[in-house]
Length: 620
Image (cartoon, rainbow, N blue to C red; front, side, top):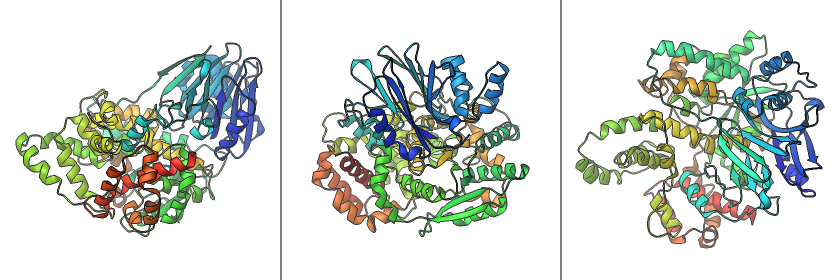
């Protein structure tokens, strides 16, 4: 796990500055390589996880001197690939996955991507052709941003903050990105908050040569289930893939553990890890749970049950609103506004877990892959609700739904009921977007002082490209390409790498996603959420764990904004600060008044505005 950066045309001292800005991602060593003929160069910061020796240092140059690689991530099948390469006559000087990747790319070029199992962002330079190949893993676990420069040149890095070191990059505010941030609470790829910086989308490759850039996808998830088999048969297919995904991610030359919430996703991972450790005669696995004083958010009891069942060495790490004092560090880690406050929990959890381990397996992605969000139930229910006469739905039920009150104390049932009844009258794409986007098009239009037609919904645009018309398929497909990489994976990487902790995510192994995506929707959701995963988990965990209610991993932001964070809201959200990011104060004040008056729970929206101002001041 590392930080990488590079330039197709180097400038004195710039690579060193970019590497310094990535130091938190790789505290173990730093490396710079330059092509004196082409004037290109790479920078690398290393967090040593596999092969801790200097032989695995980067940038890594091929034996012939022609090819150079910088790599961030882990290739989980590197040992299998190495054996194949050795059979072809290749010889290795290290035990690292990076050297395997270098030799595979030298032989196969872009075609090597189809062979890789893992999480990665890498750049591969050919000194003879003076060409650059950049790729990002299939799901977007590892970040990569780039900037087109004058004269057709290119710069890239793991983080926006590193790219801002380049004096030629246009870092002016992209107001379309601000609008999409308000919709999603993150800036969806390929945009960033800056006009001159772009994200390489998950599963995409960028090729550069002679000032010309080509970007194209090499893999995309496909949830279009057609295979109708029995549930037991499906479990027999999926469980081995699930176990393999976990075991593959347990390879490390440093201390390893897992985050354990007590929910089914992390519990399944912990159970498989414990089973594997026992089979290898290894010590009990380490597990970590974050605890809250607010009972509606606390999962310590469930986590204790799982930890006891699998006999893990379990550690509870208390959370509290005091870690919001790290807001400036939080914003700097993303390099742009990021409005999901769960990121603060991951930051705090990563900081504390790093005192014990260097690698942690986590359950992120389980909801997207195995259909675990309540909104998936809503999407299927909406098809039945629409059988109610349209006039009755639009003229009576929807207006009454707007009167449903909300809670800011961690209970979201009433809010979800209101959103369902108002959104279910819309076409599927618009309906789903109305559930998962935060500021509506009308709210964004008011906030940004616009007139005419409200802005589009970015999630609706993506939903319309789904390969299946089945609502569950389409919702999962959309989330795998939006909410997962833009939100969950973004904050997982940014926050953990602030503390040089590597997170690994077995539930989004692409082999697992491909297999689940081919199964009929009823196998993923039949008698409730996560039908298939629960059936698999039944062979690993006791029934009491499987039947625990879903809580989600979220901070009590509504409570904190009314107490500990109230002074920050008053200080940061004002006419001047909002105007500085292009927002209309009248619309912002109306939002605040509605929240403080108890008419709506706008806690996440207010937090998003706080973060927007914090980002503004961090780059001023």
